Image: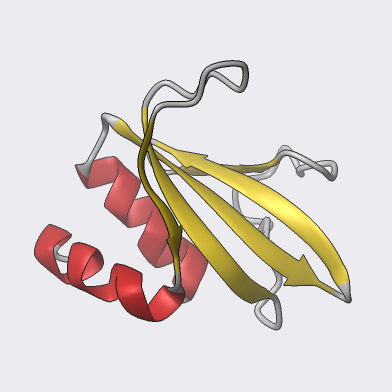
Length: 97
């Protein structure tokens, strides 16, 4: 299971949370919102087909922020900020993904 799929599965189990993932794709920054198992880029077009990955496999995840959902960009409610792929592992394991 790839990284983004694991994060989507996490939000399926933690339905009150939103993950904001900052990643680098082909040398450019992107920010992905993940809520209730679905991902959407906040900076680039997102395909309508859920089978088309929002993040390519060679993308680098820079940080992951946990927020209370639903996401309100004018008043985000952060639970944790600046997590890395390594530091988010205990949360994923706890959620069983």
